Length: 374
Image (cartoon, rainbow, N blue to C red; front, top):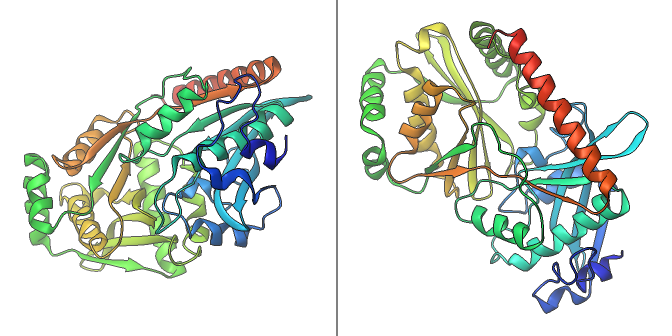
């Protein structure tokens, strides 16, 4: 199926379902797969209001044993939507799983959001990864409170199936548009109490840029991982590279110190209309001093000078203490989004291969949890 076929609404298995609603897509549409350089891809992401680090080549590049692929859609030569895709296949079997985490991106900066673009890029993704390559396509929409429900509704209309529950699906988002007084009032009472206990310590909190700062953060994370007996999150290893992305999407590192000793840190990125808390790391001494509360309050103050509408804290990984911390910071004016994921397949072999890959993933996760004594 060509770009013109996608634009005209031709589809497989669900006639007309993906036909875009906007006449502008009837001509000038082009689709590029696996041809865009990493530098160009990063520059493209910087032009959108809805990218995520999961959609960068810095992160999707084999860190999970996957093979990276990408699709970029242009209209009149201008990038209007796209996605990075993680490809998983079984030995000796060409069909498998095409996984899109927190994508596709489709909302250009400073332009009204047009759901027809979302429909059209989904059509192109299904054509490329389900029809042409024979995979099962899984899409996990980005948990933006303003667009998440609309994207999920479109996927359901297009006959994508929701077939699995996501463990600990809640994602916590702080309203980053509030002024300081409104933000303080929004906090849950216990969170506000702990913040007031933390602030008198006078932590030195600042943005950090150097390789030495990154090394300090890595050391904090290593000690925390050892203390809490968990493995390294994939994006953690890409910290330095993500900090070298284009200015408008590059990751930033924040460290909080007391008496010259770094106690807690966080990596944060502002990507379009959303800021993301990516990773946190802390020393043993941080907890009794409530250093994490001071750090997050500083980050919210910093974000008031940005364009971000939401500050995405991520999930809790089933950790009750972490859940209470993020829920308290989200407060009365924030939002909680329950993550969902959707599958589409055009050929039975794609569904079978995708299901087997998910079963192998779940077995591996159970084994790793058992090995760590969880």
